[in-house]
Amino acid sequence: MTDRTGTTAPNPAPTAEEPTVAEPDPGSRSGTRAKTGAESRAESRAATGAATGAGTGAERPGPFRVRPIATRRGPDPKQDRAARTRLLVLTAAAELFTARGFRHTSVQDVADRVGMTKGAVYFHYPTKEALAVAVVEQHYARWPLLLAGVTAEGHGPLETAERLLAGAALAFREDVVVQAGTRLQVERPQIDAELPTPYVDWTELLAGLLSRAEALGELRAGVRPRAAARSLVAAFFGAQHVSDVLRERADIVERWAETSELLFRAIRAE
Ligand code: LUB
Image 1 (cartoon, rainbow, N blue to C red):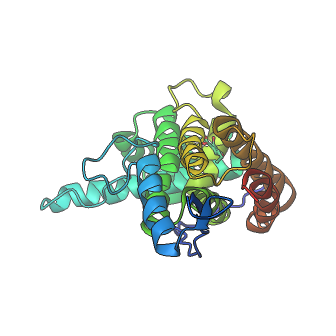
Image 2 (image 1 turned 135 degrees about the horizontal axis):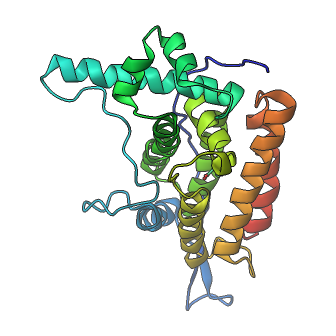
């Protein structure tokens, strides 16, 4: 059994130039004139905000309804230490789950990796299943951070979708908690615990963005937002899996960029 652990977590950030969008102009023959960048940016930002729930003031329960583990729980140093220990144990478990899978990882392995007793690990996570659930939840807790970063850039909905997935590809290469959550979701049948339903939140998020893009006329005629969102999620999952098996995800960013370019060329209006 190979051991290939020990990577830690950055959150990627993107940038881009806005497309201009046509608007009916009663004076001109074709009835259209190009919208200024500023106009389409304002409209796109509004559209994207609506899709991702960002910037609306009242925080709507967006996708990925999980919160990252807080390492500082307030003035009580004991609580801080406990929170940091939980994160340490969770990261060690993620490294082992990524390398060996759920079945071939024991709580003793996790304890050995962090230099704690099994009892001390059980104090924070009562079962190996509870550890797996926590790791999978932290996998999904990465995405709101990525979403906030990309949304804050004020791209149009289609550009936002493209950059979110590019950011996810980088996280799949660099972040062991993302890698472990993915392996555990594939091994769900072996894990006797309630794991979050996979793929549905990404599909929801992308479908929302693509519906907005459709409303802006940014989608190629005949492209159905939800169907395209499902296709993007399936393609991303496939690309990361092939890169994992063949290259331990060393080339996932490049492999996804190839697939993304192809898919968004098919989705985006000429
Ligand atoms: C993503 C995985 C691996 C979907 O959303 C999920 O559940 C995912 C883990 O199960 O890829 C692709 C964006």
